[in-house]
Length: 156
Image (cartoon, rainbow, N blue to C red; front, side):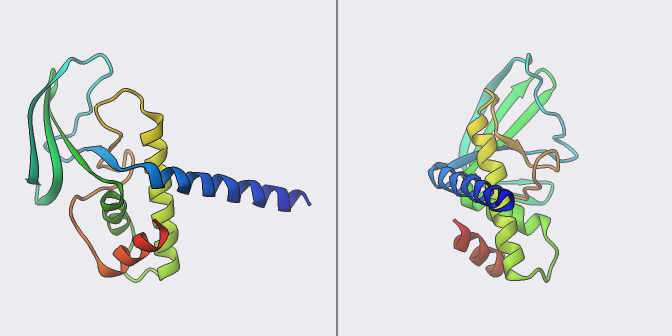
């Protein structure tokens, strides 16, 4: 009986997370790489110096969507605002190995989406929700694979 209650509670949490994901539209990702490796300190003064919609190439990685450029005391910060499902697709493709079974890809998509939605809901007052590095989830901009695209769409 106790096991059934734990399983039911876990299922309810998962369903609520997925319902929340359906309401999340865009995610703001701070792009980090070898050239842009700093995250803004909580007390750091930053100001927006640019904003455009389109394509940005950073260290060979292509980012699409809304790109914001912020200047802070420690340098420039690049933020990519993209639809949540595009983010999920990129992270799943970036974090799994070739040859994963479809059900494993679907499970990974649910995990990635749930993690991202949690940070979106958390808010924290920062300029961004997550970083593009393994500090959070590995996001490599605009990339796709038909199997990953299918897995993500099946779990949305």
